[in-house]
Length: 166
Image (cartoon, rainbow, N blue to C red; front, side):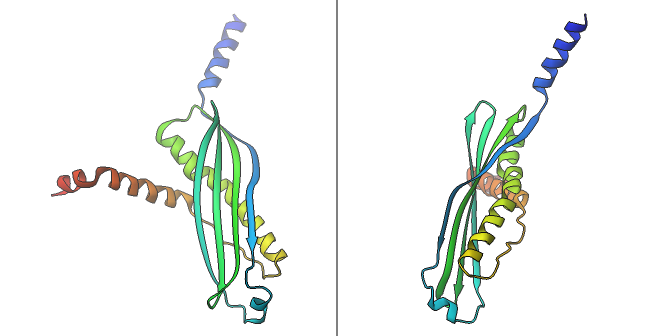
């Protein structure tokens, strides 16, 4: 009888939502300083632009690779001081989570985990390029994900939504 109870408990475990980080790694990293050493002669008052993107793909039945892509461009006046591009990636085990919850997990929660690693890599490579440290501000991936979802729904509904609101 104990075996039956143990077997039943084991099958319940498989249906429980599960999430685990399995690996974090740099997939791609690039640093360019096209105007050095001349850019070092200018007063350091950079204009910094950050572009980010996330993507994911299924690796196996319950494993997903999530890639956070960041591009940081720093300019002094019209001169590009440096450009850093990084693809910070992770493999995540996700089981028993589907639909909108899975989308939220892969589109917001996983990038939130990856961001500090990307930020540290960017700071280190910028410093090795002989530029002052660059600590990027935290990013609210939940808000970005919600905006992207809303935009996608508006584009998908298009005229149908306009007709409903009149």
